[in-house]
Each structure stands twice: as C-alpha cells, then as structure tokens.
Image (cartoon, rainbow, N blue to C red; front, side, top):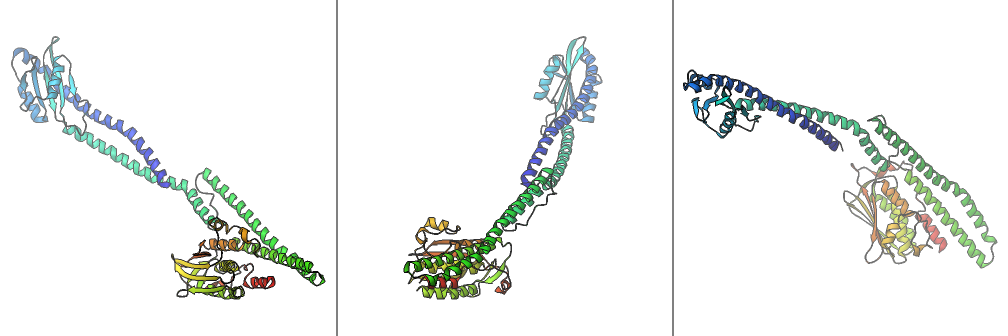
Length: 487
C-alpha cells in the first residue's frame, strides 16, 4: 500500500511539473529565438537602408564589403535581392533554400518576415530574416539573412536541461517526502494489520498504539483497541462461565449419583433395578459431559504457550494406557514408529489429549475383531501421528461435522460419549499451529491424521512436566470402568 501511495504522490508531482514545465520550456525557446530574431532584423534593416541607393544607381558601393565582413565576423549569410528575385549583392557563402525563397516572396510583397517562430533543439534549420527595401512606398528589393541556429539550439538545450534537472530534484524531494508521509500515514495501518494477526494467532493481549499517524487513524486505533478489549472480555466471561458452571455442577452431580446408588439395595423388582442402572448411566454421561466442557474451556483459554515433546514417547504411553480397554473389547491396538525420538512443538498435553480422543473413538467403534494402528512419522517438516481403524468410518458430510461441539453421528447416538472429544482435540491442535485431518480408510474404517510443527531446536519432553495442564475428559481408565459396568 505504501508503494501505491508513493506512486500516486509521484504521479501527481510529475503531472504538475509537466503542466508547469512544458509552457516554461516553450517560453524559453521562443524568448531566445525572439532575441536572435530582433538582432537579425536590426542588421537587415540597416543593410536595407544602405541598399536603397545601390539598387537605384546600380552600384554596390560599400555594401559588398559590408556583407562580406558581416559573414566573416558572425558566420551569417546575407544577400541583397532586387524586385525580380535576383541576388544583386550576395555574401560569399550565400545559398538559396526553400526557406529563403518563401521569406523573399513575403518581403517583396512589402512585409518583413522571419522564420521559424521558435528554434527547437531537434530542428537545425537556419533563422531566416527578410526585410523589404522601400523607396517612397515602392519596393525595390529585399535584404535576406540566414543565421545558423546552432547557438540558439545550444542555449535552448541548456535551459531545458537545467529545467529538467530542477524537475528531477523536485521529483526526488517529492519521493523522499512521499515515503516519509506515506510511512506516517500507514504506520498505524501496518501496526493494526500486525496486531490483528497476533490476536488471530491467540495473543489476545496485543494492542495497537493509538498515538501514531493522522487523527482519523488514531481514532481508528483507539476504536480497535476498545473492540479488542470488549471481545476479549466477552470471550473470557464465556469461557469462565463454562468452566465455573462445569466445575460447580460436579459436586451436586456427585451427590446425586451417590444418592441414586444408595437407592439400589431398596429396589426389589427387576424393572426398578433396570431403571436404577439407567439412572446411574445417565449420571455418568453427565459427569463425562461436564468434564469435557471443563477441559474444552481450559484448552481454549491457553495462549502462546508451547512445549517441546517427544511424540514417540507420548504415543507409546497413550497406546499402553488404552491397551486394557482395547483388549477388553477384543480390538487389536498396535503402535508403529520410525527412528525415535520425533519432537513436536505444541501446547501442553495437545498430543496426549488428541491421541486419547482419536484412540477412544477408534477402539469404541471398531468392534470385536477390529484393528487400530497408531503411527508416528516425520513428514512435511513436522511430526505426523496417524490413527487408523477398521470401524464403520464416516461419510464425507459427517467428516465435515465431526469436530463440532456435541455432534454425534445418527447411528451412534446410544453409544457412550459427549461429542466433545474431537472438538477438544481440534482446539488443541489448532492452538499448536497444527492440523487435524480425517479421511476414509481402505477398505473400511477411518484414518485420522495429526500434524504438529517441529521445534527449531529439539529438546527433551521434560519441560512440560511442571506445567499446569488441564486433565483429559474421561480417559482410558474411566472408559474401561464404564465398559465393565455396562457389560
């Protein structure tokens, strides 16, 4: 934008210089031509006054030597012509040209003439002046001079070069001023663009300096900061409400579950015990939902904190944690890795919780005899973790909705879960500047791929051990306990 603004200033300056410089250049050329023309007319008039008696008497007298001396001194050819157009007294270097013939015709009609009107640097025609010789109102002949235009063209060229140099200096000054002015005008916009990207990347504390640039942009910067404050406050209130509500509901929900459990021994009929079991399952589902909301609120609140972890080590721990549940459900869970370690730069627990969500879904929906494979590789200048299962998979439309909050496929509405696992994984992956993609497996199933950027300098995963990280919702132990109870 600065370049376009400077170009517009420069174009305006060039137009002004052209508009002012062109008439001035033409005036300089015309003025210099008029000065030379006045001198030549004065000389021709003097020669005409001397040539009158010579034409009447037929004697050249001193006029011949005058024209010879005039040509030798000034290199100006001259000639005295009678009324028939014949050169009576020519200077030694006199030659007839088209311009001198035309000027002679005008002079013999009784009018003095000169041409050209202006001498231009690219035209080398001589300056021709013709003055009639009158005697009592009768035209006896004419005096014609032909002056070389080299001196005039050099003078005009010098003036024009000086004028162009002055214009060039003005253009350079305009460019320097335009860059300074454009920088002053655009500095708030540049900072506003940078701060907008910082806020979009998660730094909600970034603000624009509102004391830069013209008053209009200062007001815009102040309005932007106010808007950012309001939006940040609203987001904090919303996340705080979700976190507080989830946390506050846990205690009465726990008490409610205990009371429901205490009702079990007092139920004697089969239908009552079945309803009692359903009530316990619903409280477990609600507990899982609150845990998921609390984890999601904490995950969305994390900003600009990155840790370096060994993805192979994390994957090994998560596969080991989910192995009992997979074995209980007759699902084969395996891990495939390349050369270890494979480092990734993420927000705390991003890989842990994302793998928990993906492995949980894969084991849950693969069914007995299914296979779930977790792969860790290095690709595209980053760390890639892939979870491949042999379950029913999802349709393209379902893949587009899979990371929405509380969304669940129609055919699995009765399966345990809150519909927040993939949402939490997507939030953590996005906060880590990573990517979560899913596509159908062949011949059946689903392939979920996590990509995380590699760190600039690899380090150990121990730096995340002392961080306060949100716990994962549910987890393999809770899933196993739930499966045992439901089984």
